[in-house]
Amino acid sequence: MIRKNQRLVNELNLLSDALLIFAAYFAALFTKYFLIDGHQGALVWIDEPLYWGMALAYSGAIVAVYLFARLYGSYRFKEMGTESLTIGLINGVGVLALMALMYLVRMSEFSRVALFLFWLYSTLLVIGKRAVVRSFLRHYRKLGYNQKHVVVVGSGHFARQYAEDLRRNPHMGFALDGYVSERECPGLGPRLGAFEQLEAVLSAGGVDEVVAALEPDEIGFMRQVLATADKTGVRISIIPFYNDFIPDHPTIDVVGRTKLINMRTTPLDNVLWRIVKRCMDIVGSLVLIVLTSPVMLFAAIGVRLSSPGPILFRQERVGRDKKIFRMYKFRSMRITGTEDTGWSTNADPRKTRFGSFIRKYSIDELPQFFNVLKGDMSLIGPRPEIPFHVNHFKEEIPLYLVRQQVRPGITGWAQVNGLRGDTSIEKRVKYDIWYIENWSLWLDVKILFMTVFGGMKNDEKIA
Image 1 (cartoon, rainbow, N blue to C red):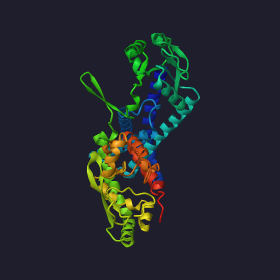
Image 2: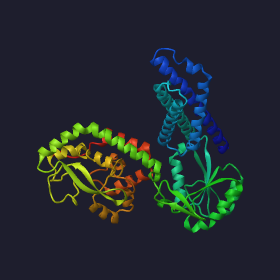
Image 3: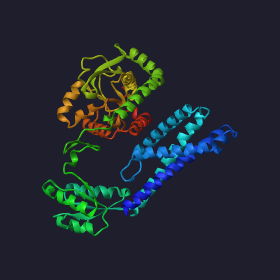
Image 4: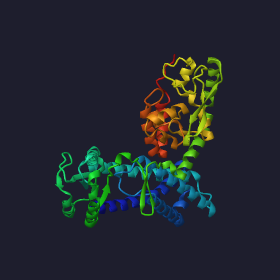
Protein backbone atom coordinates (compact mmCIF):
# COMPACT_ATOMS: atom_id res chain seq x y z
CA MET A 1 0.00 0.00 0.00
CA ILE A 2 2.82 2.40 0.87
CA ARG A 3 4.49 1.86 -2.52
CA LYS A 4 1.21 2.41 -4.36
CA ASN A 5 0.51 5.58 -2.40
CA GLN A 6 4.07 6.80 -2.95
CA ARG A 7 3.72 6.40 -6.71
CA LEU A 8 0.50 8.39 -6.62
CA VAL A 9 2.12 11.12 -4.52
CA ASN A 10 5.08 11.28 -6.93
CA GLU A 11 2.78 11.62 -9.93
CA LEU A 12 0.73 14.35 -8.27
CA ASN A 13 3.93 16.08 -7.18
CA LEU A 14 5.28 16.09 -10.73
CA LEU A 15 2.00 17.31 -12.24
CA SER A 16 1.58 20.09 -9.66
CA ASP A 17 5.17 21.26 -10.22
CA ALA A 18 4.50 21.56 -13.97
CA LEU A 19 1.26 23.46 -13.38
CA LEU A 20 2.92 25.86 -10.91
CA ILE A 21 5.77 26.59 -13.34
CA PHE A 22 3.20 27.18 -16.10
CA ALA A 23 1.23 29.50 -13.81
CA ALA A 24 4.44 31.36 -12.89
CA TYR A 25 4.77 32.40 -16.57
CA PHE A 26 1.49 34.34 -16.46
CA ALA A 27 2.19 35.69 -12.97
CA ALA A 28 5.51 37.10 -14.22
CA LEU A 29 3.85 38.73 -17.24
CA PHE A 30 1.08 40.22 -15.12
CA THR A 31 3.58 41.65 -12.62
CA LYS A 32 5.87 43.13 -15.29
CA TYR A 33 3.40 44.55 -17.78
CA PHE A 34 0.36 45.35 -15.65
CA LEU A 35 1.67 46.10 -12.16
CA ILE A 36 5.11 47.56 -12.98
CA ASP A 37 4.59 49.12 -16.41
CA GLY A 38 0.91 49.89 -15.93
CA HIS A 39 -0.21 49.02 -19.47
CA GLN A 40 -1.48 46.05 -21.43
CA GLY A 41 1.58 45.48 -23.60
CA ALA A 42 1.70 41.86 -22.52
CA LEU A 43 -1.54 40.83 -24.17
CA VAL A 44 0.33 39.49 -27.18
CA TRP A 45 2.33 37.20 -24.90
CA ILE A 46 -0.88 35.92 -23.32
CA ASP A 47 -3.07 35.60 -26.42
CA GLU A 48 -0.50 34.10 -28.79
CA PRO A 49 -0.75 30.25 -28.80
CA LEU A 50 2.97 29.99 -29.62
CA TYR A 51 3.89 31.36 -26.20
CA TRP A 52 1.39 29.10 -24.47
CA GLY A 53 3.11 26.19 -26.18
CA MET A 54 6.55 27.45 -25.18
CA ALA A 55 5.47 27.81 -21.57
CA LEU A 56 4.01 24.30 -21.57
CA ALA A 57 7.13 22.84 -23.20
CA TYR A 58 9.38 24.65 -20.74
CA SER A 59 7.34 23.37 -17.78
CA GLY A 60 7.59 19.81 -19.07
CA ALA A 61 11.34 20.13 -19.67
CA ILE A 62 11.99 21.48 -16.17
CA VAL A 63 10.06 18.73 -14.39
CA ALA A 64 11.95 16.22 -16.55
CA VAL A 65 15.18 17.68 -15.17
CA TYR A 66 13.65 17.51 -11.67
CA LEU A 67 12.99 13.84 -12.32
CA PHE A 68 16.57 13.30 -13.48
CA ALA A 69 17.81 15.11 -10.34
CA ARG A 70 15.77 12.69 -8.19
CA LEU A 71 13.48 15.35 -6.77
CA TYR A 72 10.51 12.97 -6.84
CA GLY A 73 10.36 10.35 -4.16
CA SER A 74 9.73 9.98 -0.47
CA TYR A 75 10.27 13.03 1.72
CA ARG A 76 11.29 10.82 4.65
CA PHE A 77 15.04 11.22 4.14
CA LYS A 78 15.38 14.42 2.08
CA GLU A 79 16.60 17.72 3.51
CA MET A 80 14.50 20.75 2.60
CA GLY A 81 17.50 23.07 2.27
CA THR A 82 19.36 20.90 -0.23
CA GLU A 83 16.19 20.27 -2.23
CA SER A 84 15.35 24.01 -2.35
CA LEU A 85 18.85 24.91 -3.53
CA THR A 86 18.69 22.26 -6.27
CA ILE A 87 15.32 23.60 -7.47
CA GLY A 88 16.63 27.17 -7.54
CA LEU A 89 19.73 26.15 -9.53
CA ILE A 90 17.76 24.08 -12.05
CA ASN A 91 15.24 26.88 -12.55
CA GLY A 92 18.06 29.40 -12.95
CA VAL A 93 19.82 27.34 -15.61
CA GLY A 94 16.47 26.74 -17.29
CA VAL A 95 15.67 30.46 -17.54
CA LEU A 96 19.15 31.20 -18.90
CA ALA A 97 18.68 28.47 -21.52
CA LEU A 98 15.27 29.92 -22.38
CA MET A 99 16.80 33.37 -22.78
CA ALA A 100 19.49 31.97 -25.08
CA LEU A 101 16.85 30.17 -27.16
CA MET A 102 14.85 33.39 -27.54
CA TYR A 103 17.91 35.19 -28.87
CA LEU A 104 18.56 32.38 -31.33
CA VAL A 105 15.02 32.62 -32.75
CA ARG A 106 15.13 36.45 -32.68
CA MET A 107 12.71 36.96 -29.79
CA SER A 108 15.05 39.34 -27.97
CA GLU A 109 12.25 41.82 -27.26
CA PHE A 110 11.06 39.66 -24.35
CA SER A 111 11.69 41.46 -21.05
CA ARG A 112 14.62 40.32 -18.92
CA VAL A 113 12.69 41.54 -15.87
CA ALA A 114 9.81 39.23 -16.81
CA LEU A 115 12.26 36.33 -17.15
CA PHE A 116 13.73 37.08 -13.73
CA LEU A 117 10.24 37.22 -12.23
CA PHE A 118 9.45 33.94 -13.99
CA TRP A 119 12.47 32.32 -12.31
CA LEU A 120 11.57 33.86 -8.93
CA TYR A 121 7.88 32.91 -9.01
CA SER A 122 8.44 29.40 -10.35
CA THR A 123 11.10 28.73 -7.72
CA LEU A 124 9.07 30.14 -4.82
CA LEU A 125 5.89 28.36 -5.89
CA VAL A 126 7.54 24.95 -6.28
CA ILE A 127 9.55 25.25 -3.05
CA GLY A 128 6.53 26.64 -1.17
CA LYS A 129 4.31 23.79 -2.33
CA ARG A 130 6.89 21.20 -1.34
CA ALA A 131 7.34 22.83 2.08
CA VAL A 132 3.58 22.69 2.68
CA VAL A 133 3.35 19.05 1.54
CA ARG A 134 6.35 18.12 3.67
CA SER A 135 4.88 19.83 6.73
CA PHE A 136 1.51 18.17 6.20
CA LEU A 137 3.05 14.70 5.77
CA ARG A 138 5.22 15.08 8.86
CA HIS A 139 2.22 16.12 10.95
CA TYR A 140 0.13 13.34 9.44
CA ARG A 141 2.80 10.75 10.24
CA LYS A 142 3.18 11.97 13.82
CA LEU A 143 -0.52 11.19 14.26
CA GLY A 144 0.14 7.60 13.17
CA TYR A 145 -0.94 7.75 9.53
CA ASN A 146 1.01 7.04 6.32
CA GLN A 147 3.24 4.68 8.28
CA LYS A 148 5.86 2.44 6.69
CA HIS A 149 5.75 -0.86 8.59
CA VAL A 150 9.18 -2.29 9.36
CA VAL A 151 10.44 -5.56 10.84
CA VAL A 152 13.99 -5.70 12.23
CA VAL A 153 16.04 -8.86 11.91
CA GLY A 154 18.47 -8.97 14.82
CA SER A 155 18.49 -7.83 18.43
CA GLY A 156 21.96 -6.40 18.99
CA HIS A 157 23.33 -2.89 19.44
CA PHE A 158 22.40 -1.54 16.01
CA ALA A 159 18.91 -3.05 16.10
CA ARG A 160 18.29 -1.22 19.38
CA GLN A 161 19.89 1.96 18.02
CA TYR A 162 17.68 1.86 14.93
CA ALA A 163 14.56 1.40 17.05
CA GLU A 164 15.56 4.35 19.23
CA ASP A 165 16.20 6.54 16.18
CA LEU A 166 12.73 5.73 14.85
CA ARG A 167 11.17 6.70 18.16
CA ARG A 168 13.05 10.01 18.14
CA ASN A 169 11.91 10.84 14.60
CA PRO A 170 8.17 10.08 14.44
CA HIS A 171 7.74 12.55 11.55
CA MET A 172 9.58 10.11 9.26
CA GLY A 173 6.61 7.74 9.53
CA PHE A 174 8.21 4.37 10.32
CA ALA A 175 6.28 1.91 12.49
CA LEU A 176 8.40 -0.86 14.02
CA ASP A 177 6.12 -3.90 14.10
CA GLY A 178 8.62 -6.08 15.94
CA TYR A 179 11.81 -8.04 15.51
CA VAL A 180 12.99 -11.48 14.46
CA SER A 181 15.89 -12.93 16.44
CA GLU A 182 17.17 -15.94 18.26
CA ARG A 183 17.31 -13.88 21.46
CA GLU A 184 14.87 -11.78 23.47
CA CYS A 185 15.52 -8.04 23.50
CA PRO A 186 13.40 -5.66 25.62
CA GLY A 187 12.68 -2.34 23.93
CA LEU A 188 12.42 -3.64 20.36
CA GLY A 189 8.73 -4.39 20.52
CA PRO A 190 7.23 -7.85 20.16
CA ARG A 191 9.50 -10.73 19.20
CA LEU A 192 7.92 -12.25 16.08
CA GLY A 193 9.99 -15.42 16.07
CA ALA A 194 13.43 -16.85 15.31
CA PHE A 195 15.23 -16.52 11.97
CA GLU A 196 13.44 -19.64 10.71
CA GLN A 197 10.06 -17.92 11.18
CA LEU A 198 10.99 -14.86 9.06
CA GLU A 199 9.29 -16.19 5.91
CA ALA A 200 6.04 -16.78 7.80
CA VAL A 201 6.21 -13.28 9.31
CA LEU A 202 6.70 -11.63 5.92
CA SER A 203 4.20 -13.86 4.12
CA ALA A 204 1.47 -12.77 6.53
CA GLY A 205 1.49 -9.35 4.81
CA GLY A 206 1.50 -5.81 6.13
CA VAL A 207 5.30 -5.46 6.19
CA ASP A 208 6.77 -2.80 3.88
CA GLU A 209 10.45 -3.27 4.65
CA VAL A 210 12.88 -5.57 6.44
CA VAL A 211 15.91 -4.05 8.16
CA ALA A 212 18.71 -6.55 8.73
CA ALA A 213 20.79 -5.58 11.77
CA LEU A 214 22.79 -8.74 12.35
CA GLU A 215 25.71 -8.95 14.73
CA PRO A 216 29.10 -10.33 13.55
CA ASP A 217 28.35 -13.78 15.05
CA GLU A 218 25.01 -13.85 13.17
CA ILE A 219 26.33 -12.85 9.75
CA GLY A 220 25.96 -16.46 8.55
CA PHE A 221 22.18 -15.91 8.47
CA MET A 222 22.44 -12.97 6.03
CA ARG A 223 22.04 -15.09 2.89
CA GLN A 224 18.90 -16.66 4.37
CA VAL A 225 17.45 -13.27 5.32
CA LEU A 226 18.10 -11.80 1.84
CA ALA A 227 16.63 -14.84 0.11
CA THR A 228 13.51 -14.73 2.30
CA ALA A 229 12.93 -11.03 1.65
CA ASP A 230 13.32 -11.55 -2.10
CA LYS A 231 11.03 -14.59 -2.06
CA THR A 232 8.25 -12.70 -0.27
CA GLY A 233 8.74 -9.52 -2.33
CA VAL A 234 9.57 -7.29 0.65
CA ARG A 235 12.20 -4.57 0.36
CA ILE A 236 15.28 -5.05 2.55
CA SER A 237 17.86 -2.65 3.97
CA ILE A 238 21.03 -3.63 5.82
CA ILE A 239 22.69 -2.02 8.83
CA PRO A 240 26.27 -3.40 8.65
CA PHE A 241 27.92 -4.33 11.93
CA TYR A 242 30.71 -1.84 11.05
CA ASN A 243 28.13 0.97 10.85
CA ASP A 244 30.09 3.25 13.20
CA PHE A 245 33.02 3.36 10.78
CA ILE A 246 30.97 4.39 7.73
CA PRO A 247 30.74 8.14 6.92
CA ASP A 248 27.41 9.87 6.32
CA HIS A 249 27.58 9.63 2.52
CA PRO A 250 29.75 6.71 1.40
CA THR A 251 30.07 5.66 -2.23
CA ILE A 252 30.44 2.19 -3.65
CA ASP A 253 32.86 1.29 -6.45
CA VAL A 254 32.74 -2.03 -8.28
CA VAL A 255 35.83 -3.95 -9.39
CA GLY A 256 34.61 -7.08 -11.15
CA ARG A 257 32.63 -9.00 -8.53
CA THR A 258 34.06 -6.95 -5.66
CA LYS A 259 32.19 -4.00 -4.10
CA LEU A 260 34.36 -1.36 -2.48
CA ILE A 261 32.90 1.06 0.05
CA ASN A 262 34.79 4.32 -0.29
CA MET A 263 35.01 5.59 3.28
CA ARG A 264 36.28 9.07 2.53
CA THR A 265 34.32 10.24 -0.51
CA THR A 266 32.97 13.76 -0.02
CA PRO A 267 30.48 15.85 -2.05
CA LEU A 268 33.39 18.05 -3.15
CA ASP A 269 35.00 15.12 -4.95
CA ASN A 270 32.47 15.97 -7.66
CA VAL A 271 34.25 18.21 -10.19
CA LEU A 272 31.13 20.29 -10.91
CA TRP A 273 30.54 21.11 -7.25
CA ARG A 274 34.23 21.92 -6.81
CA ILE A 275 34.02 24.40 -9.68
CA VAL A 276 30.83 25.94 -8.29
CA LYS A 277 32.40 26.37 -4.84
CA ARG A 278 35.57 27.86 -6.34
CA CYS A 279 33.55 30.33 -8.43
CA MET A 280 31.65 31.35 -5.31
CA ASP A 281 34.98 31.86 -3.52
CA ILE A 282 36.39 34.06 -6.31
CA VAL A 283 33.28 36.22 -6.68
CA GLY A 284 32.71 36.38 -2.92
CA SER A 285 36.30 37.31 -2.06
CA LEU A 286 36.40 40.06 -4.71
CA VAL A 287 33.14 41.56 -3.44
CA LEU A 288 34.23 41.32 0.19
CA ILE A 289 37.64 42.87 -0.52
CA VAL A 290 35.88 45.90 -2.02
CA LEU A 291 33.27 46.12 0.76
CA THR A 292 35.77 45.75 3.62
CA SER A 293 38.55 47.91 2.16
CA PRO A 294 37.73 50.88 4.48
CA VAL A 295 37.86 48.57 7.50
CA MET A 296 41.16 47.06 6.31
CA LEU A 297 42.62 50.56 5.86
CA PHE A 298 41.56 51.42 9.42
CA ALA A 299 43.08 48.16 10.73
CA ALA A 300 46.35 48.73 8.85
CA ILE A 301 46.75 52.20 10.36
CA GLY A 302 45.86 50.91 13.83
CA VAL A 303 48.37 48.06 13.67
CA ARG A 304 51.12 50.42 12.47
CA LEU A 305 50.49 52.80 15.39
CA SER A 306 49.96 50.13 18.07
CA SER A 307 53.45 48.57 18.08
CA PRO A 308 56.62 48.32 15.97
CA GLY A 309 56.63 45.73 13.22
CA PRO A 310 54.92 44.86 9.95
CA ILE A 311 51.20 45.42 9.35
CA LEU A 312 50.56 41.92 8.09
CA PHE A 313 51.39 38.73 9.92
CA ARG A 314 52.36 35.96 7.49
CA GLN A 315 52.40 32.47 8.89
CA GLU A 316 52.78 29.03 7.36
CA ARG A 317 49.61 26.94 7.52
CA VAL A 318 48.65 23.52 6.23
CA GLY A 319 46.14 23.58 3.38
CA ARG A 320 44.37 21.09 1.16
CA ASP A 321 46.30 17.87 0.53
CA LYS A 322 48.72 18.90 3.34
CA LYS A 323 50.30 21.61 1.16
CA ILE A 324 51.94 24.50 3.03
CA PHE A 325 50.87 28.07 2.25
CA ARG A 326 51.40 31.46 3.87
CA MET A 327 48.26 32.82 5.50
CA TYR A 328 47.75 36.59 5.94
CA LYS A 329 46.38 38.30 9.03
CA PHE A 330 46.61 41.76 10.48
CA ARG A 331 49.27 41.55 13.18
CA SER A 332 47.66 41.57 16.62
CA MET A 333 50.73 40.73 18.76
CA ARG A 334 54.13 42.09 19.52
CA ILE A 335 57.01 40.54 17.61
CA THR A 336 58.36 37.42 19.44
CA GLY A 337 60.08 34.22 18.46
CA THR A 338 57.13 31.88 19.08
CA GLU A 339 54.92 32.61 16.09
CA ASP A 340 55.45 29.17 14.52
CA THR A 341 54.75 27.07 17.61
CA GLY A 342 52.88 29.30 20.06
CA TRP A 343 49.08 28.96 20.28
CA SER A 344 47.48 32.17 21.43
CA THR A 345 45.08 32.20 24.36
CA ASN A 346 42.61 34.73 25.71
CA ALA A 347 45.15 36.02 28.24
CA ASP A 348 48.14 35.96 25.89
CA PRO A 349 50.65 38.65 27.03
CA ARG A 350 51.89 39.09 23.45
CA LYS A 351 48.66 40.78 22.33
CA THR A 352 48.42 44.54 21.93
CA ARG A 353 45.31 46.41 23.02
CA PHE A 354 44.43 47.22 19.41
CA GLY A 355 45.22 43.61 18.50
CA SER A 356 42.70 42.40 21.09
CA PHE A 357 40.09 44.71 19.55
CA ILE A 358 40.55 43.51 15.96
CA ARG A 359 40.66 39.88 17.12
CA LYS A 360 37.43 40.28 19.08
CA TYR A 361 35.58 41.36 15.95
CA SER A 362 37.59 39.11 13.56
CA ILE A 363 38.96 42.15 11.72
CA ASP A 364 42.42 40.57 11.83
CA GLU A 365 41.12 37.81 9.51
CA LEU A 366 40.13 40.14 6.65
CA PRO A 367 43.41 39.83 4.66
CA GLN A 368 42.59 36.15 4.22
CA PHE A 369 40.20 37.21 1.43
CA PHE A 370 43.39 37.51 -0.63
CA ASN A 371 44.29 33.92 0.34
CA VAL A 372 40.87 32.89 -0.95
CA LEU A 373 41.42 34.79 -4.19
CA LYS A 374 44.80 33.05 -4.65
CA GLY A 375 43.22 29.62 -4.12
CA ASP A 376 45.01 28.77 -0.88
CA MET A 377 41.77 29.00 1.11
CA SER A 378 38.00 29.00 0.73
CA LEU A 379 35.45 31.32 2.30
CA ILE A 380 34.02 28.31 4.15
CA GLY A 381 35.98 25.34 5.45
CA PRO A 382 37.96 23.98 8.40
CA ARG A 383 40.31 26.53 9.92
CA PRO A 384 43.96 25.93 8.87
CA GLU A 385 46.52 25.07 11.53
CA ILE A 386 50.27 25.62 11.60
CA PRO A 387 52.48 22.61 10.72
CA PHE A 388 53.60 22.22 14.35
CA HIS A 389 50.03 21.59 15.54
CA VAL A 390 49.13 19.39 12.56
CA ASN A 391 52.09 17.10 13.22
CA HIS A 392 51.13 16.95 16.88
CA PHE A 393 47.38 16.41 16.54
CA LYS A 394 47.52 13.85 13.73
CA GLU A 395 49.10 11.41 16.22
CA GLU A 396 46.57 12.07 18.98
CA ILE A 397 43.22 12.80 17.32
CA PRO A 398 41.60 10.19 15.05
CA LEU A 399 40.60 11.45 11.58
CA TYR A 400 42.42 14.74 12.12
CA LEU A 401 44.00 14.79 8.64
CA VAL A 402 40.62 14.17 6.99
CA ARG A 403 40.26 17.96 7.35
CA GLN A 404 42.98 18.39 4.72
CA GLN A 405 40.82 16.89 1.97
CA VAL A 406 39.27 20.32 1.33
CA ARG A 407 40.55 23.88 1.23
CA PRO A 408 40.71 25.49 4.68
CA GLY A 409 38.32 28.36 5.26
CA ILE A 410 38.08 31.80 6.82
CA THR A 411 35.05 30.60 8.74
CA GLY A 412 33.54 27.17 9.17
CA TRP A 413 30.93 24.99 10.82
CA ALA A 414 33.01 24.64 13.99
CA GLN A 415 33.56 28.41 14.27
CA VAL A 416 29.89 29.40 13.94
CA ASN A 417 29.08 26.83 16.63
CA GLY A 418 31.41 28.57 19.09
CA LEU A 419 34.54 26.44 18.59
CA ARG A 420 37.20 29.06 17.94
CA GLY A 421 40.29 30.27 19.74
CA ASP A 422 41.30 28.31 22.83
CA THR A 423 38.61 25.59 22.57
CA SER A 424 38.51 21.80 22.31
CA ILE A 425 40.37 20.63 19.21
CA GLU A 426 38.55 17.26 19.37
CA LYS A 427 35.18 19.00 19.05
CA ARG A 428 36.47 21.19 16.24
CA VAL A 429 37.59 18.12 14.29
CA LYS A 430 34.21 16.47 14.84
CA TYR A 431 32.38 19.53 13.45
CA ASP A 432 34.85 19.92 10.57
CA ILE A 433 34.44 16.31 9.45
CA TRP A 434 30.66 16.60 9.64
CA TYR A 435 30.90 19.66 7.38
CA ILE A 436 33.14 17.87 4.87
CA GLU A 437 30.89 14.80 4.68
CA ASN A 438 27.65 16.81 4.47
CA TRP A 439 28.81 19.74 2.34
CA SER A 440 26.28 21.56 0.16
CA LEU A 441 25.98 25.07 -1.24
CA TRP A 442 23.03 25.59 1.08
CA LEU A 443 25.24 24.72 4.07
CA ASP A 444 27.89 27.21 2.91
CA VAL A 445 25.25 29.94 2.58
CA LYS A 446 23.93 29.07 6.05
CA ILE A 447 27.43 29.33 7.57
CA LEU A 448 28.02 32.69 5.85
CA PHE A 449 24.81 34.07 7.36
CA MET A 450 25.64 32.63 10.78
CA THR A 451 29.09 34.24 10.54
CA VAL A 452 27.72 37.68 9.64
CA PHE A 453 24.92 37.55 12.21
CA GLY A 454 26.81 36.42 15.29
CA GLY A 455 29.83 34.39 14.23
CA MET A 456 32.28 37.30 13.79
CA LYS A 457 32.37 38.43 17.41
CA ASN A 458 34.08 36.16 19.93
CA ASP A 459 34.86 36.20 23.65
CA GLU A 460 38.24 37.86 23.20
CA LYS A 461 39.06 40.19 26.12
CA ILE A 462 40.29 43.67 25.23
CA ALA A 463 43.20 44.30 27.58
